[in-house]
Length: 136
Image 1 (cartoon, helix red, strand yellow):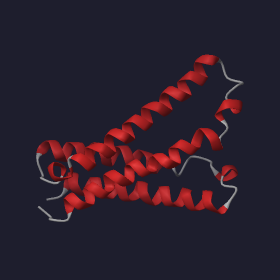
Image 2 (cartoon, rainbow, N blue to C red):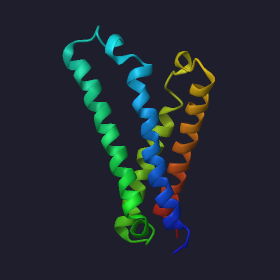
Image 3 (cartoon, one colour):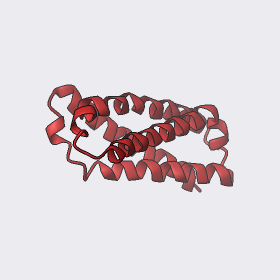
Image 4 (tube, rainbow, N blue to C red):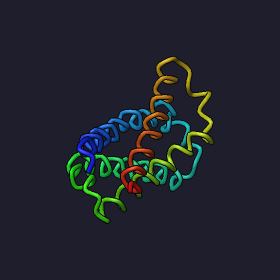
């Protein structure tokens, strides 16, 4: 086992939890309270539910890595499957970066910087977890 892998996975766990800072800004920056008012109540509720599920998944993914970094690095079948799931999770999120039209919302420099930082994190997560899942 690569002796640095547990440290990398531990850091990836904290970085995933750090993504939640950006996630917490989404409802505010996109003004969900007012912009979703035109939708039926059920649709508004679904936005919040889906958002909550994504947040809970990121919390779980991050905590799994922080608490179990050594076990994820051990090369067991379970660790490879968990890391494959994480690679798919973040790979899907990375691919969404190419189709989401965010330009009108990136109005100031720090939003641009944050967007590109998130893209880099999504790519890093995808590559790290894919490496752990499929290493020889």
